[in-house]
Length: 128
Image (cartoon, rainbow, N blue to C red; front, side):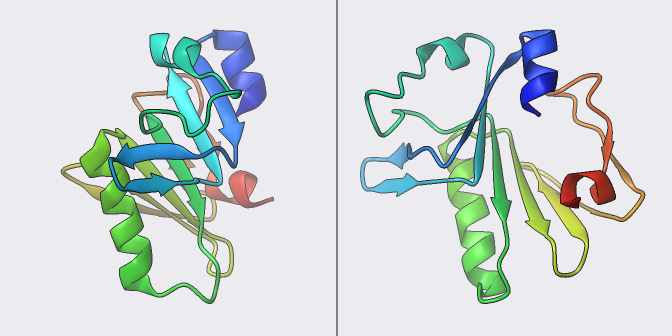
């Protein structure tokens, strides 16, 4: 992801950065992708970032309950994230959640996002 964003200059990706989703909610996605001018507004010296990432990537652990994972994804979407990627390494799955849809991808299925043109990657590659 980092290499892709450096080549395309669409935005920036950050690991484990706190993002303010509402006045009383701060979340730390495993990977936060900020696109366009929003990426330029991220100041890592001032935490939390005052807005949600455009793409929030969460790696689901075996101990997390489905309802908690879903609630987390909805928090990002309600705050303004355009996509939430939920990686489930144990089952080899990727859930891509948007405001109006959810896709399930597995194995050799290719993840393509309108937000990241030219970044087709398989689920297997993401989980490798």
